[in-house]
Image (cartoon, rainbow, N blue to C red; front, top):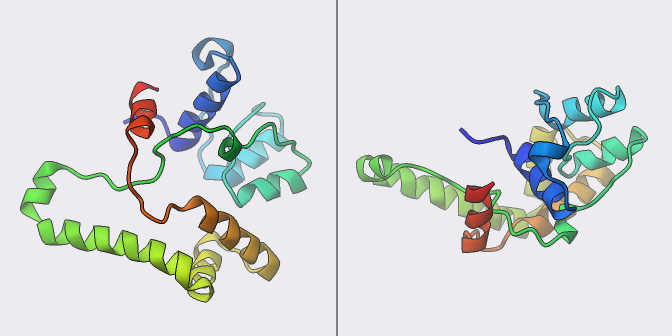
Length: 161
C-alpha cells in the first residue's frame, strides 16, 4: 500500500518548491487525520503538514500559518476516485454498477441540493456552526468535479510518486 494521501500530497508540494522530500525532510506518520496533525503542529512535534479543507481553518485559528494552497499550485493529482479489481467486476457487476451510480449521485446531490449536502457534511464532519458549514459546503462544492473522470496526468503523478 502506498503512502496516505496527506503524505503523497505534501511530497508533491515540496517537490514543486524544489525540495527533495526523501533527502531534505524526515517524514513522521501522525495517526488521526487533520485534527491530530494540527495538534502535532501546535505542539511542535512536526514542522509542516498538509491540511485539507475545512480543517485548515482550525489550524489558522490555532495560530498556524498557511505556506501554500495546493489548489493554486496546478498539481494535477488524481486524489479522489473509486478503485476495484477486475475479479470483483466480473463476479459482482451489479454491486460495482450500484457503487458507481451512488458515487455519481452523491456528486449530483452535493451540487443540486445544498440543504441535504450540508446536513450530511455537518453530521459526518461534526460541524454545527451554520457559517462554518456553509463555508465548508461552498469550498467542497468547488473542489468536487462535476464529472469525476480520471486524468492521465493525474495518474502519472500518483504512480511515479
